[in-house]
Image 1: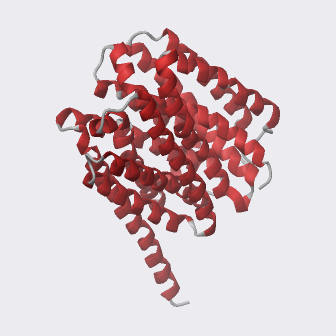
Image 2 (image 1 turned 45 degrees about the horizontal axis):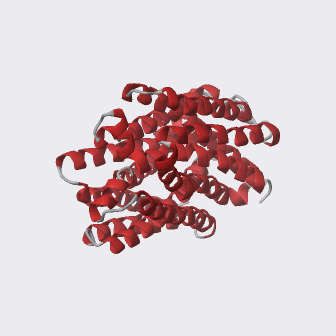
Image 3 (image 1 turned 60 degrees about the horizontal axis):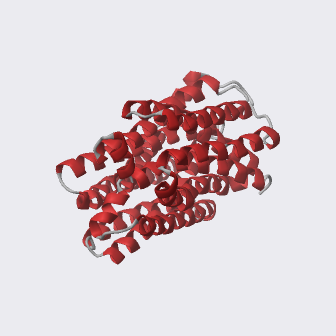
Length: 392
């Protein structure tokens, strides 16, 4: 794959954005305590980031669709860095919510543009791998960002983590400025053309699948720390080790999913990923209370969830080949809506039932995603057979 190292630089930027988004999951109890809110209320910091990315990113992408992708990426990374530094001055819960809005919009746009640029740099035959590499940046934020951040929060304080991330983000900012070439759409893309993709039934169903499987993931992962603590008394170091292992599994899942989407096809990979995700959440609920069983199911669940993502993104890119930015921006919005949906469901479950029920809640949500996938792909095969049987 040509320009592979440039794609990895883009993945580094996405890694830092993902760390800022997901780090709340590892330090949610610490944040809640300092801001004097409940744990479920602190989960709104995840929800607000996700909603800001989901709503703000498509608007910015729509307005800047004909602008130079490099310039857009540089601008969004700059805003992301400044908003990360703002965390240190955000002493109230309300101010933190505002800061997370800026982080969500800038981070969401930067992630979409980085992914679209990566698919163009990679070439036709390696788009799935390029998407997988960018998503490895997100899963890498789970591998290193969340566990290391959880561990360092005991030493530095959770606010200092955002300062460090903001300063580290200067590295990909400079790399993009020096090494990523200018890119524009080959022809003008209007807002009407962007909205028209939502009229495609298959795209609409695919986006609902994204919403549901990410929602299932976020239902549990947003509250993964209290969920693990409910199964055993764990120190910050022990939690960091478990989160690190879970991140490794998500990293493996992204790599496997990207390669499998290129070789076996996106539909096969989506089927497999959703089926395994549902199975692991079902089994997780069965072994609740047995720490080692819970850990094992979480690891396999992470692999399955992150293997689904590059295949889902590739499927949408192939449906809108003229402008992958559009498909990726809309799908990224539904990913963020999924995070918001899941964190909201998880918060309701925790406040009205118990943290142990989160696995069941996630299972039923991803089961809906699997049923939609069966309907989407089976319907496509049926339509194809009907067209072949029509008389010439």
